Figure 1 (cartoon, rainbow, N blue to C red):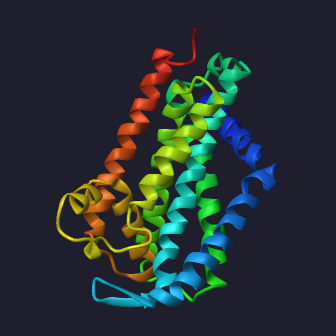
Figure 2 (figure 1 turned 90 degrees about the horizontal axis):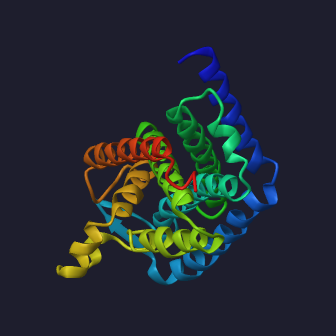
Length: 261
């Protein structure tokens, strides 16, 4: 990477990170309030009725079981939202043209948007994990897997967010993608129940096709050391998807998709 390209990448990444750090009320307060409610209602109130959850030979309290899934929900939603908003906001106000005319390559531009979105996702995911420690005691059984899955899933959804930011034609499109695509996949991805608790049949088969199952179980494996799916296979597949979406992002930028009239 040339000095000019490196400087441009660092500058754009710094700008995008500072953009959400300077607005903590929009970046951190909503997930804080939302997840306190999640832990209080689903973890404490519902958890007292459910009791414990058993999976992969491990028995844990229900609130401990749902914590990794809530971390995933917050991390990927914010990673997706950050990159999609940055791209679309730049298109909407036409200041993205300044970035496009810079001496940076398209791949470095894309990398800056993806990295900044992943940083936001990681920060929010960490915030949610910290909130969870006030409701239940949970350790980190597999730190390497926890870090690896956290990086992969935030990079993946930040990459998907770039596609969303290029595709969206108005602000409603951005809201629709986050609320009606990302969140439903998470809720049906084993956050509040084990996959093995589902009866054999089409619903269980469809659930296993949901990539969120492997993300949630990967983060759960990092925290608790137990998973319903093979963590190594999950990490490999998710890493492959991340690379694919990064290449798609770079290709769309080179083509000018959504960037030029």
